[in-house]
Each structure stands twice: as C-alpha cells, then as structure tokens.
Image (tube, rainbow over all chains, first blue to last red; front, side, top):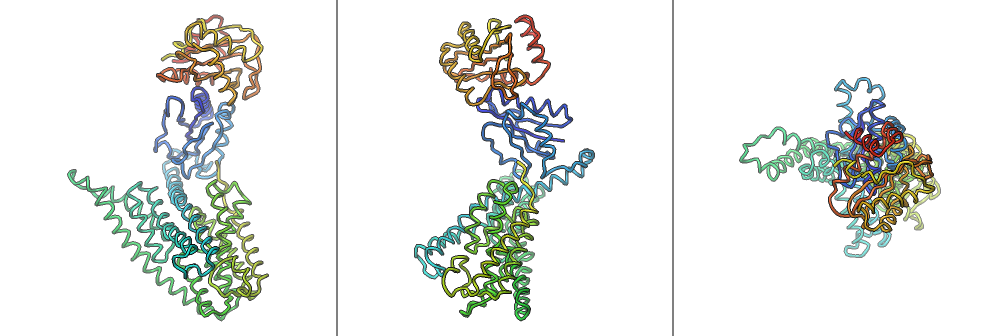
Length: 459
Length: 151
C-alpha cells in the first residue's frame, strides 16, 4: 500500500527525523511504500507533491506542531504525535492500512498494478474532495445567514421584512444576502477545487444562475462541477498562437467558460427545471383532496429533498398559498414542521455520533439547532452537499414522518414561517401538542437513521 | 556536514557513572565548554531543561537525546555518553537509557549543522547502529560506527 506522511516537532531537530525514519523503516519491513515530508528546523524537506498524493491509502501526520492539512482535503488522515510514530511505527501503519474512507479495498492490494482500479479510485476521492472544498467555503455563509435571519425575526417579529430600514429588517437583509451568496459560493469553490482560480468565475456565475432558476444547491453542485471541467477542457483544447497566449487567463477562459455555463444553466438545466416545477405544483394541487396524512408525508419528504431546490419550492409555495388567505392551514403547518426537521436532525446526529462528522461539521451542527428551530432548512445544505446519498434520504424520512403526523392530527398554522418562535403566540397554531410531537418524532427518526448510515470520519 | 564533524573525541564519554539525567547533561555540557562550543553553560542547561519539560527526549530503545537551541551556545556541537548503568529518563517506552546524545545548537547562524543532527536522529531508529555504539570500545570506534552508518 502507498502512504504519505508529514513529521514535525517543536524544536525540529530530533523527533521530526526520528519519526520519519521510523515510518520509513517500518514501511519497508511491511512492504508498504511511503514518502515522508519532514517539517523541521531546516524547513520542509522531501516535500509531498500533488503527484505523490495520487493513489494514497492514507495520510499520516506525526506531529507535535500544527500542520496545514488543506492539501489533503477529502483524504483519510491519521494524526498522532511524533512519539507514537517513533514508539510504534508499525502499529501506526497497520492502523493507517485499515483506515476506512477513500480507501483501496483490501482486494485491490493484489491488483494494484492493474491501472484501472486505482485510477477509478482517484477520481472518486477527487469528486469528494471537490465537494468538500465547496462545502467548507459555503458553511460560514450558511451559519452567518441563518443566524442573522433568525435574529432578525427575533428582533422584529415574523413580518420583519415589511419594515424596511428597521434594525430587525437590517439583520434579516444581511442574512438574506448571505443566503443569496451561499449557493454561488458552493458552485464557485467546487469549480475552484477542480480547475483552480479560473474555475471561480464560471462556477460562481453558474451557481447564481442555479439559485435564480430554482434548481438550488443541487443545481449549483452540477454547475460547479461543469464549470471546473469546462475550464480544464478549454485549457486543454483551445490552442492559441504564442503571441496571443497572454489572452487565455484574462479573456478567453472567463468569457468562453461563462458563456458555455450560461447556455448550460438556461437550456439544459433551467428550462426543464421550470417545467418540472410547474408539473409538481399541479400535481400537489391535484392531491389536495386525498388522505391528509399521505399528503403530509409527501410534502414533508419534498421539503427535505432539495432544500431550496425545485421540489422544496413547490411544496413550500403550495403551503404558503394556503395561508395567504389568512385561514388556518394544515398544509402549511405540515410544510413548516417538515422543514424544521433536517437541521435539527443533523444537529442531533452530530451530537449522537461525533466520530462521523468533521470538527467543522460539528461546529456547524451547533448552529443547526438554532436554524432548525427557526425553520431555516438551509442549515442542512452543507451536510447534504457533502454526502447527498446518505444525508438526503435520512432527512427525507424524518421530514415525511413529521409532515404526516402533523396532518394526521390536523394541526394548523396561520403564518407561513417563524419556526418554534410562533408556537408560543396564542392562536397561531391549533393542536399544538401533536404538532410538537411531530417535530420531536421526525427529528429523532432522521437523526437515528443519519447516525446509523453515516460513515465515520477517520482522522 | 558530517555528524562526526560535530562530535569531537573529548565529547564522547564511555562508561560514565551517573545517577540522574541532569548529571549526564552537566557532564556533557561541561565538555562543550572545554572545547569552546558553549560559553554560558548555565543558560544552556536551563534551555535544555525547558525543552525537556515540553516532552521527554528519552526516545526509547535506551536512548536519550536532550537538546536545545540556546543563547549560551557559540557553535553547534554534539556530545555522547554511554553510561555504565542505565538510568531512568521517563522515556516514551518506559525503558531506562544508557546512550545519551546531548545536542547544542546556537539560536542564530547557519543551519548546516541541523542536517547533520537530523541524520543522527534518523540513525537512532536503526537497531544495528545502537548495537555498534554499545559495543564500541574506544572513542575512535564510536566515530567509525557513526561514519559507517552515515554513508
């Protein structure tokens, strides 16, 4: 198996090199391949290059100082002190060899010389790395935006946005601005991870178009990947005479990639998205007469499906329309409670199974308590974007359960948002007890599923 | 720079009798002063103690590598002691140590000696190297063993 490692100690004279040597000796004895970068008092030596990171089973960091891990985004990282590497380098390598995530399967060891398997593996960890880069840039926007919006509501009431210029409305607007940017930022930094700086322009623009055309964060993920690979393709296939090559970074790449991106977002993603949205809305209207609990389940699952994307929007718009007349609405009640479940379930899951979330995610998890209680479903987006196939189904189940319970007990609401904070106001919600029960059950169901299906983060 | 260029014969003490690690540091630091590598022994020993307090330099396998960058150091130097009887150094693997390498590094100046020291640190991870240090009968044999493994 192939490993890379970094060793570093405070004085940078002895332990750095002893740990490096111990790892190299142990790797040789065990038949592994390892390259060790030493960050000692003479500076970094034997520096790991981008090529070194390909096909690597795990990154071992044996250090007593803080090491910049950004270049290992998405890779399996094992962190120990130099002491542990010096004392038991073989044990450390065994741990690294057995580490989960981004791993070559044990069966692959024998076929490592065959090119196809490792290559496929590389592209897989690549996709994950690009997603994580985008997500980690997006998280601060989500947290800042969500909390400011919640604060705005807390200060100025649930119709705060009707009082322009007020303190509460200002906080709310700042939060909304952060939310406006978060989806483009996701697209921009997925593309950045793939194609470096030139990826940012088409990625960000594509992400913004996704936000505007209603395809939400899923659309922005597509845009980010498309932008990254469009830029790479332009770099590869557009050949200019030497005298004009200076135009590539400032003119050709940004203009061409953005034009392709724009066409893609409008004709390939935007148009079908609009008609899809219309179809969904019509379908929901046709369901109005059916079994209440079933409608609640469907609406709940839709709320969690893409959080701000076309499916979620269709459900929310459907619900919001029913309260526009001022009547108590069971549909809106189900929609809101279902929309509160995803962030709360994620927050609970980060507490239940800490080992399955990165430090960054656990911190974002704390903010999700406030976001979920405020019916700001977007808090769940970074988690869903990082691991869509596990997170989306998990939160859909809980949201469906919450929506179903709410409808079955006939809870109603007279406002289109506000989260837990409006429940305290008399007469806003009818059948309050089952309504709260719906939230609790939905949250627990999703959190347990999520904690069960998520994979542990190996450090 | 070769490791042996930092290690003069007078700084290799074979069969040293010592009760504590501080005794060993003091004896070896004294040899640094004699050869003019350290001008302020007290300052230097204080810095060694500070480094030691951050985490043991008893690295296991019976080896200790007390070291410090210090204002009291004039030029880089290395000293070695082989004890008659192993003593406790609160080492990582709990084993007592009989091989001590004391390292003196100036706070300023060229880093060329650091490469030599990093090579020494790497050599310490090889059992055969330690074995040859333990069986060496003279200072010359110690240096020969180091040179043999260094290349």
